[in-house]
Image 1 (cartoon, rainbow, N blue to C red):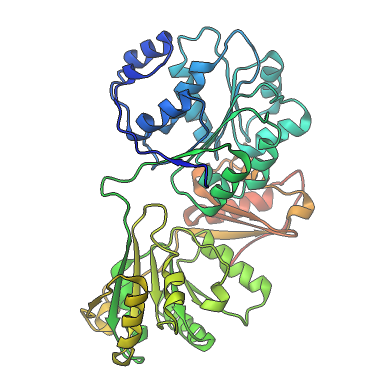
Image 2 (image 1 turned 60 degrees about the horizontal axis):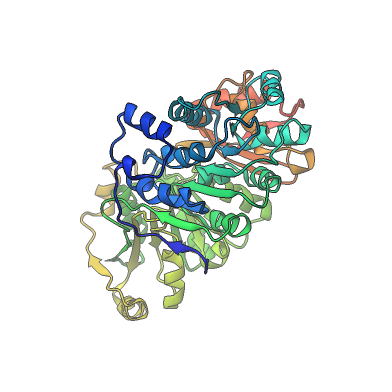
Length: 474
């Protein structure tokens, strides 16, 4: 973003140095807050100036205080209009954020904070909106429901916060979020807070923010680059070598690149036979099968994706732990494109290549092209011995459920989430993962430990008042 400023400020970290109202300074002192966390120290002064902001920091970094204090500082409690809207991915997070805001605003007489989330009765929410509130903390699905009912008026909103924006997008709430953002005034402060920075957030930032400042809080070790390493291996040794490396790295999410479709198929079969959670992606797959494979990989129901470059082209895969080059590509630029899928958003990344003796010239060409040396290591043990050490990447933590309804049925992610976590479903929102809505069907990822229960709840219950066919995706 050409207008985006990169903030590297080193000012006072004392809360007392902030231009806050006396009542807020008093509450901060009463709560025992003395020093600001890095995200607070870099964000709050900018927010008090009225800047739009994209804040990237890990969970538990104090971002709720970072956006709450500036909002409360500019709030007019004498006006019973909704002046701030905070969107969160789950009911539980809404409750936490609202609790923190009420605690910080306890010396603002008459402050009214309302939670609008699914799984809760609609009538009390309607009554509270009718009486008037100052701040709304809600999930995208329920907030959009109120907008469509005409019970929620956002014309006086001056601040909008997307908290855990990356998770909301990952859960499939982008359509709801954009519908809501189009209803707020053009002149308002827009804040995105996120643990990661996928391309989808950048796109929304360009569409809805005005010259935003980006504040990125790195871990103490700073931004970690991609660690590149190669292992000498003959074609015959490669399957066992890869299994050994999977045992060593135990990635939650990894991609293995092969040059040929036949290699993809053979390798997927060999790894699956050893109990590895994997799937094959190549050009011969039907579109429906390709959609199924990618949905399971994106929502972490499959841990290892084995693919050709052509099949993986155009797929934006975030947060990969490791990229394996089972075959070195013909050109260095393809190598760069492959390994660029790991080590994003300040996270550590690893690129591992298996190369034969005759492929040293390829490695040298890659090193020259990238300007980065690739460490050469040896396989510590034979594949047979390594296989007996552990379960490599056996079981994925998530399971995927298929629902026979989609956009054409006016299905939204919030409807599925509500069916699982509302009064009828009763499951924890933290156990629900990515939700993907297609035209005629949907996928939802759930923690494997509750997969059977989630399947029964969806089969026994209703979504949008209707019955749909629900099946586990194998």
